[in-house]
Length: 177
Figure 1: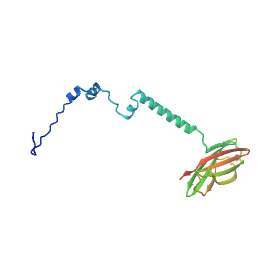
Figure 2: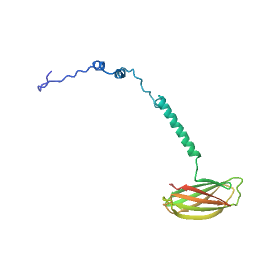
Figure 3: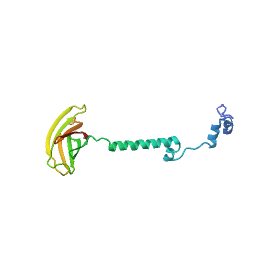
Figure 4: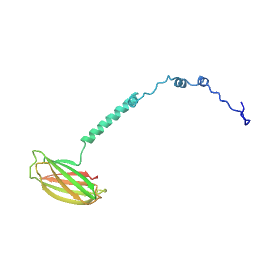
């Protein structure tokens, strides 16, 4: 065949059958559709082989263990002292830090017991920036002890609680609001 510009048109002859005659067995099976097909769907792909089932079980087990450790692990912002449960929270808003210490007592806690609080406010390097101390009498009902500090560099609050002769330290990170 010739085109009008004098060049010969190239013709390409392609035959799949001829090409597959010399191909390896795995290639012949792939073209014929005899190879196993991957499963359709996300969950089926996760449990298709022994290895993938094992990985899914290991991932689920790790997730459960991590959740249990987080839920039951140590909580530095909660402490019990002389039958009184203390929970401290702190957040910053408009260059002020608001600290709230919730008290919840049991039947063994004595009403009118004096709670001495010593707050220590620390910056990012753990250096004490400010300190506050005061005392308050405990009432049987659930109550809040609150204080504020004007300093935006404070990242954590440490409070030493003293009830009678017992003393505990409670630590809380300052949340950004």
